[in-house]
Length: 392
Ligand SMILES: Cc1cc2nc3c(=O)[nH]c(=O)nc-3n(C[C@H](O)[C@H](O)[C@H](O)COP(=O)(O)OP(=O)(O)OC[C@H]3O[C@@H](n4cnc5c(N)ncnc54)[C@H](O)[C@@H]3O)c2cc1C
Ligand code: HEM
Image (cartoon, rainbow, N blue to C red; front, side, top):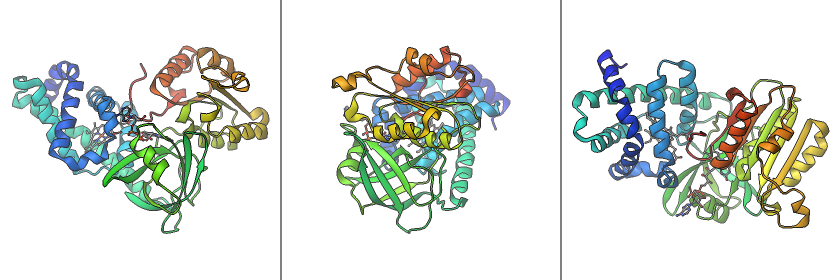
């Protein structure tokens, strides 16, 4: 725990640290990869180039300093971080590496302004946060391991099927290599996939698109033009191949209300919606699903969703729009998901539970539109497909 003196120092220096937080974070990562090259494979280097990961780290430390006495705010801050860390199998001893390199980066950016007392106070804050994360991560590892079919760290799976869902998306079906049951999951959750690509490990996360069961998992992956892991999965992973998976985690799960559920996705953001939709329908909830794709060629799961809409009748409304239709038939569905469309489909009588995923700009627009339409924060659930950012 931080002492009074350290707290005073943190309060006094927080504005200058916050002002330089992103520079500190962007100095920190290259320094850490140079000193400890082995941790590099845990990170998605693209998130470094775009600055998303340095920004996420910087924002979380500042948010921690502001919310360290508010248990609810802390839970909201820590849960996505803990899940992401568990999905990459982060270990407690790796926190010393980050501590050393973060303090060196603070020194490098702020120079002589960092007296030993200031360094000591910020190091104290880091370790207080780190210990909370380490405890929460250990509790999560233990829960995952102790659940039926559960395990800790990586487990060997076999690819048993791969099915194209659109020109860009392929579903991959995995069964455990030991033929034992697997831990079931909550719809909306994701798992970590460990891939060996050109002699280097890459870790990525993918939402689960199957219904929860204890036989295996399905993920559905979009092939990204320059993407390292997604191209590897599409181009080189075949039935019979072995892949290591980490147990499912994730906080974007169905709430316990019986209100209507509004699912809103763009592109591959539709993946977590599939299992959320099935769960909500099973629970007897009204579901409105709005999905946006560029055109029919990249509209994955279209036939499945249309069949579901027929099967469930008035319980499920499935509306899809194409931003770049390529035929007269497709042009009948021309549109984007904007405030006008959301207004048309938003249930009036009860506040729906809203779930949305897609590119960051899309999520920002949807979040703003829903807020303007009176959907308060607790009813707006979303998942980033990269490091968490800010929607405002
Ligand atoms: C919780 C969660 C759930 C997810 N669920 C899914 C899911 O269900 N399905 C899914 O497909 N993805 C999902 N993702 C995203 C997934 O984890 C990967 O980020 C995604 O597959 C891209 O990884 P990659 O290695 O192929 O691309 P990366 O190599 O990480 O590149 C990322 C992007 O940058 C572009 N890029 C890379 N290098 C360059 C360059 N030099 N110049 C220009 N552009 C470049 C790539 O084309 C790609 O669009 C999820 C992510 C999270 C965090
Ligand atoms: C107090 C210490 C730490 C904090 C505050 C922190 C914070 C964060 C945050 C905010 C994210 C993004 C979460 C999200 O996407 O929602 C993240 C992801 C991640 N963290 Fe940490 N972290 C800490 C320690 C560590 C350590 C010690 C390592 C390993 C050396 C590590 C490795 C990662 C990786 C690999 C990711 C995923 C990044 C990616 O997508 O490329 N973190 N962390």
